[in-house]
Length: 559
Image (tube, rainbow, N blue to C red; front, side, top):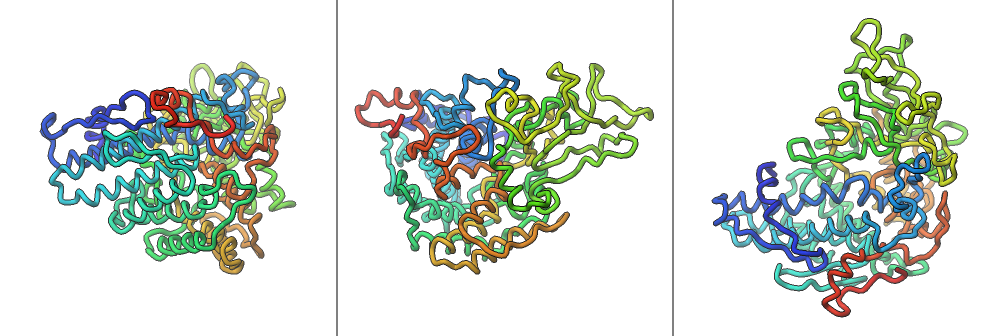
């Protein structure tokens, strides 16, 4: 994928009006620009992936998948910050509304992705590129991925093959069957070796496994209890076996290396939002949860955190309860990575400074900023390291001391309330530090293949021994610093807990909670138990845009 093509062609694929009808204008690139046949193909391919940038940013898909769950909460910091008309509180308490801008933005990005995929599917066969059929298969797989997100979040899928058609709306089993057929079509046609940022064979097989694992949910969304068909579970195992047997992926020995700046070639990653610097990608995942008085990069004195979401006390307690009386940081390498070991003289060279990763608790230490920048040591080279205080909040007497308590009370909404998450590395490469992070955003990785297979074994045929082996394969693979002890037993509750430990902050929690029957539970400030909240409302803008076709687009129940 070329940066030049992305900037040149993405603007030619104009979204006409609202997103509901998936109408795109196709630019005749051959006559307009004199591009080669391959450049036309690649331009359409890049445009179809380009919506990942808006979709997987920290306040869109991440918000819907994490802040709606027991893993993350974002109160009004200090009573005012992150107010945003209450949308993050509504997200956490399941008081979703049809005008929520983040629900709308996520919808629009998905629909634009589907639309651009349809455009590519139509344009590519008109070229003479010898690999046109392979690119079409890739675009059909990408369209299926966008459609899976639409089905998971909003309970419906838009389908059309020609850009001039009006889309057909599918729900339930029909939507499931459509996505399945598209992925099966692409499986043997897409390349194996095109990297984690594209729809490779491994990515298609991993997504098929995820589709089959959630089949019971997608086919009967509001069931009191989901009926996991053994045939679907066999398919999960089949496709997980294919990914593992390919030998193309291996579990990362260093857990946090998967979320480093330089993670593109990490052997565990199957499918990612590719945002290496040369591709213009960026995100704010690393700064979203940090304190406004944490400055992870000495070269950027304005690159601080924003005091966004913290993990709920309920989720933290799952770690506590699993490892008590030991501290989870001493037992499980996925919980925390200590990078900032303060020297005796509290000075450190800039190139050696790196903040901690994982779940951050208690008093925080770091670079001390004043009106002249960061305090330097007497040698003029090193940086002074010390306790952090809320100077950016005009409270130099208030320590940055992350607490377990975080809720909507005054105390629970303070700037230091809640343990924080720094899973992705704070980018060392970007031009501004704070606003741009260039680590690939992980969408599918090998650990999920093992844990999906373990779940399918438990739900399908009661293979407890096989499930336990898969879970322990993942737990004991993280050997770079120390290794978590293997489990002695496994059941669905323990597997659910294990998925929380492995995938926290990775935009999987809502989908997992629904499948495990946990989404109607009570946690932190959330008491709503309405099963209709398993999907989000269709945005009002989409309903309004479709109003000219009576009965075409109906709101989801309960909104």
